[in-house]
Length: 211
Image 1 (cartoon, helix red, strand yellow):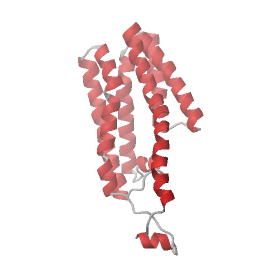
Image 2 (cartoon, one colour):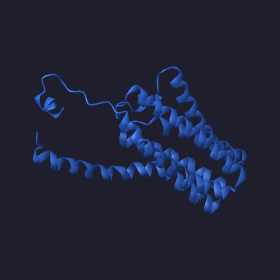
Image 3 (cartoon, helix red, strand yellow):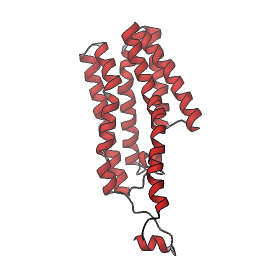
């Protein structure tokens, strides 16, 4: 069955309309990291950490206002930023803020592993409404992300223990997110292979013709 002209026009229009929505999300995700980097460059790690905490609170408030909810992972990460950032500023010990990524990544890896053991993949609970994958697909995706989080925790330990504070801050601001983005892109083939076919309602002639 030929696609009506209206739907051909609607698809690109919908894709184009989603592009502006990407920028606020990037600002919410990247904003605190860039503030952290700038604050450390200008006034040192403690001022950068304090600015990071304030920027994190603002980004969570903006996300709540814009999307009417707080995503689980940014919320957990934000809470840990506030706790370990507060310890860093109060005790004047930057070890706490440097440990924060290790703790966050390790926590996510453990939660994903526990979900697998309980046969309740957490990724399916979080992203099930957005992606339709088979049970095997969710399991493989969960294993991959758990392994990735373990690797990122190890990388953070290597960087902060063996390089300068400025090098660690730069890597945190410009290394972690690109690596996560590239890893997520690398999972697209798996998601295509294990995607569930769309369900069709009985008696729908257009759906039956497409199949």
